[in-house]
Amino acid sequence: MPHVEISITCYATLSTCEAPGDSGAVHGGSVYPDIEVVRGHVLARNYSLLKENQRKVLKVWCLIWQDFQVCCSGMSLLLTPTTLNPSPQGLRPADPKKVSGELFTLTYGSLVAQLLKDYENVDDVNRQLERMGYNIGMRLIEDFLARANPGRCYDLRDTADKIQQAFKLYLGVSPSIGSWNPGGDEFSVVLETNPLAEFVELPDHCLGLRYSNILAGIIRGACEMVQMEVMAWFIADQLKGDNVTEIRIKFVKRLEDAIPAGED
Amino acid sequence: MTIYNLYIFDRDGQMLYYGEWTRKKQSGMSREEEAKLMYGMIFSIKSFVTKMSPVDLREGYLTYCTNKYRLHLFETPSRIKFVLNTDVGAQGIKELLHQIYTQVYVEYVSFNPMCPLNKPIESELFAAKLDEVVRQSPAYASRPA
Image (cartoon, rainbow over all chains, first blue to last red; front, side, top):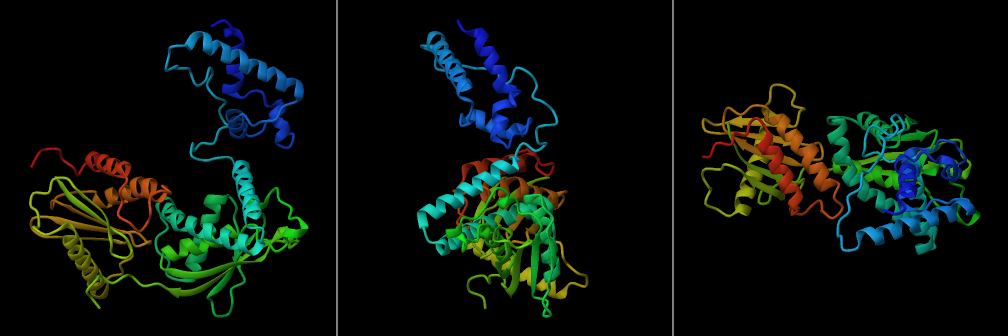
């Protein structure tokens, strides 16, 4: 290819992401941002660069494009190596299914923002988030059962432990369980930090928004799949100036096994 | 050793999936009839065993054996039931059923947003993966019937 020299340089940059300078600025100025985040941005081409670098990048993209037109007209398939060097070890999460926490947090943020645009009314947004969570919970419970193999719960304290375990597994935080009511059918899940709300500040017109309401929905959906009807709602939220984020969970009733048709 | 067939039921007793490998004799009724009978039987056996058992049953795994075949029931805490029929000598079926649940059902049904949870499973990918897992298991012998 005519511009092979430049494209190799470019390829090396893209494939190892050893150029965190500008992309790093996007991520709070850290010098070595999470490699997966940068890679995601590079692949999606939505990173922001300094103006002069932007021009350079555009130029390189153009040169690559010209090369492709020269060399690949009449070709329908082009195989390229995915990396030139082995990717840096230790920066990559061990589990290829895991995504960066930041990417997740930002995705959730844009979801909530879009819901606010679509519904305008914060109560409707709260309801939608809860419903989405409910649908997620109904599926997520299967993964939890498969991965953690937790066995069955024989009382609500068991259930509380499992919920605690699930927070650790899926959000990487360990909430504390407490504030049991005297009847033993109501407790709180207390989060010191809420990964969903890491970059969030609620504007004044959204004070009624239960930003992380999806979590309440997930808990309700997941419990329902294991024969427990529960109610879950937020009673404290760091976004509203409370010290902690607290979800209250109340046991409603046990759901019974379905009886086969034709039997009583 | 042989694996005959597999039924998967959801929590409402609806059959989600039926798979067959080396079934040598058909029941002569429609698949729906058969599924209803099967669900009715495991439901009754389960409640009978739970009542009569002299020891605590907490595993979610149950098996009975006739002199010709063995039935294995694996039930998840979310009440999805996997019923697998094998020959009497089959080993390691509990592990196989667990594997079917974690590596096939969860991956290709729970995680597939296009796959409704309370309808029979139509995903071809699910069927293909299930077949692969069953055929690779030590309990499955490839000799033809």
